[in-house]
Image (tube, rainbow, N blue to C red):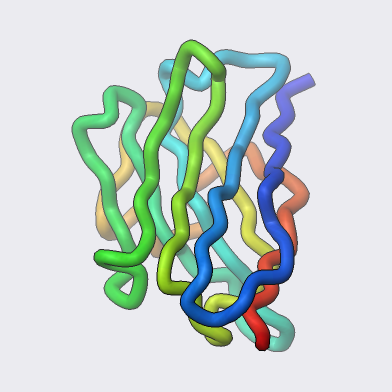
Length: 127
């Protein structure tokens, strides 16, 4: 069974940091691009960041540039999202998703372009 499992969410104060993890089971991430998405209550799911299978390409939504960093450790079959300078507007359920090989600035805006999804982890930014 192909699964992605997110972890690392929680409650953090504005300005704080969290590192989310996306671990794969049942398949190897080596040949997959991984995207991070988030969905706040009452809003559509939106792309946050993605990384191609060979790490050659990384993309971020405009509001996340300079604050979030995506990385991958294929030996651990895990992708990470380091989130710094968090704001209340970052509050959402964060999901990771996989698709074959390739990611781009356009693809990160298309949740439907991703095939395998995790169940999400809640991130709450509040004082």
